[in-house]
Length: 151
Ligand code: RTP
Image (cartoon, rainbow, N blue to C red; front, side, top):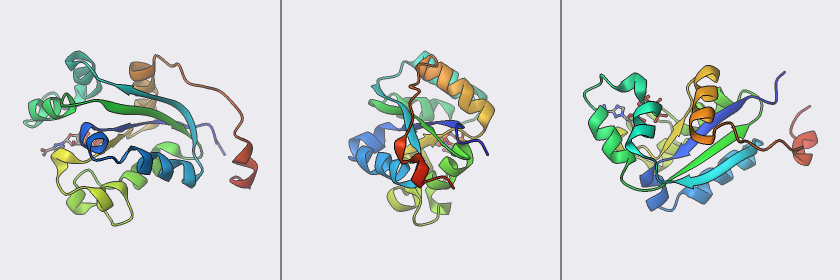
């Protein structure tokens, strides 16, 4: 059992503008994940084009980059058991219309182009994204509550 898996979670400009930062952080904290890195950033076009590089051929790519450039974002690394997969479940489906109630997008979003948050879709991509956004500068510390979270 690996309790040290890390995922990159980002609150997009609409999430910041709508005051959802505290709510999203609270969900990850309450679930039992450990916060390993956190910052607010106004990303450059170059950084976003790298982050979304695999979508460069998609018709919505220019719109996506414009959206992500529209305001500051919150960048986070969360750590814990199955952090990548569980993080995606907590975010909900990419298109909020398909997101279950109880997920972040299912509770707070209506359209795919304003879907509040990003979460790494694989352990491999999480590693790349943590390097890209944090240059791997994540904190290592013991979460004392872990003894009440893991059997
Ligand atoms: P994310 O990377 O933001 O967590 O999203 P995802 O993996 O769930 O979805 P992905 O396919 O990687 O798409 C990245 C983001 O692009 C926007 N998008 N717009 N048809 C559209 O207009 C469209 N499709 C995707 C969304 O903001 C999506 O989160």
